[in-house]
Image (cartoon, rainbow, N blue to C red; front, side):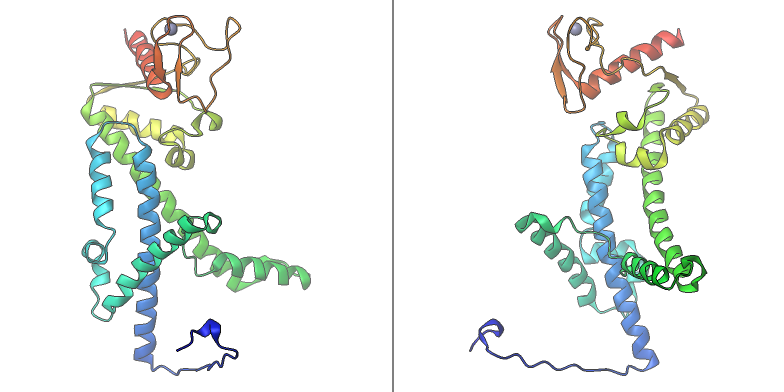
Amino acid sequence: MKSMAQMKCHYGLKVRIYPSDRQKKIIKINSDASRFIYNEMVAINKELMQLRRVKLPIDIVQDRIKQLTMRQNAKQMSNHYQFLEDKRIDSLTKANAIQNYRKAWNAFRKVHATGVPKFHRKSYQRILSRRARRAKQEHRPLRTSKNYQKQRLLVAKLHAQVFERRRDFLHNVSTTLIKNHDFVAAEELRSKNMLKNHALAMSIADVGWRTFLGMLAYKAELYHRQFLTVNPKNTTQACHECGFVMGTAGTEKLTLADREWTCPKCHAHHVRDHNAAQNILTKGIIKLA
Ligand SMILES: [Zn+2]
């Protein structure tokens, strides 16, 4: 038997189906579930990637990694989200959604250009831009279109969900930090630039450093802990051992690429973020006294 590609002619059949109202509902429930699971897989993997970058030795991060890793199969996910237990959802729908996600990943590994799997957006974005183009052609403002507003709202909702997820994550981190330590010190302000590449960067860039500090502050009060902020000046560039500041005495400043470095004066070897954390703590203790 020849494969499709080997055949000279291809003959296609286009079929239109007329589902009953009940069938329509079932189709909708299944396609919604499929999209939900796929998006959940994307979200889980994004969060896992973030969590694995967190170098803090805190249990809540490790627990969350374990939890999320487990949830990456149809049964566990159904357990977690009760509405997926709906009898009208075909069991293959769930398994296929996960399989499709994995296929997307495999495609990514094979052909790097495909990019990592992204959220299925019901092609809202495409619809939006198509509408925008047409509105421009017809010289009318896009805002007057009712449908446009509807779609825009849905896209906004998706963004809000990601934002919520990240805020939850920062809530977890701040609670754990405060609960498990008598004293916590943090930098007053981190510029956008300094946040690049940082362990918690993705979450913090979205939710804001100030919000994160706010969480730490009110939780410290709640749990009767000490919390204060310090001036971020030179926390990254100064050697914690001898106080030498990189960028002085003819040396080059450390860049974001320098994850580890050796102090040219006392030859101590540092992991950048860890050295910075020690400087912050020292500043905090001095301020506390
Ligand atoms: Zn040094």
